[in-house]
Image 1 (tube, one colour):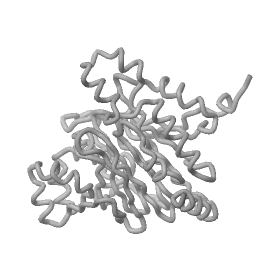
Image 2: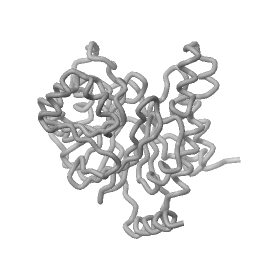
Image 3: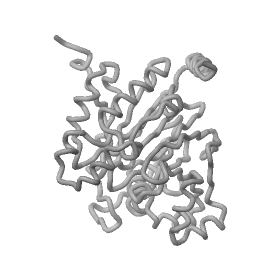
Image 4: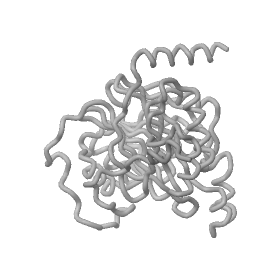
Length: 332
């Protein structure tokens, strides 16, 4: 018996054909020669909002959100040299980055050697006030704060790029928690959630209606239990303060779909896949259970960037209906 999945693959294309196979994770990596800076190459006029995951995994996480000729980053878990190279491969220069939003300050999400670069380039860093003590422990953070480049928030919306409103939900993860983002603009809406051991109802409501959803799908439970890693590491990762399994991520995506209208999210990007305790085929078996996701799902990789995902917004009428539905739910 044929199904929609027989006619349309679950995973959409991840990379453009021209993307090189990748580079290393650390600053010591020399790899292939760096491509020329983006500013030295002809630029195509960018329109709308688009998303490129520059790398995602336990060795580093960073995502670029582009709007016109400006961009922002969510996390900077690779050093400046590596991230600059991946930005250039994606057609961006570091000079185009106008803001850095942090989910939390684990080293795979923020490398301390970014502080000098942020100060030099006058790039503001946005973080939850709960994470400020972690930032202040890092050498160089005082200079960044004195320059007015540390922007703390505590639940209130803010504007990391002109025309983009960021709203947040604080989720449980280790000691200080992690921040999930919703980026709203007239050009579309992006949801971003990673490093959370479980998905609270408030997060589902927060992500309802996003056009593109980036969410972690970190581990396969059986592979984790059979892995040679220390028991305490596996216990932490599988706890309510750890990471999402493939099953948990799948359920979260389904819940967001049910809470949305117009078939959103139209694109689902899966983040932070464990290299030891997960495999693309494991992810595919789980997400293939819902035919609605055929062709919508993209995997990310630790050692290379994705293609640019163009955010395709819902028609205005559908957005208005979604706002009315959410307001009605809030009144119940």
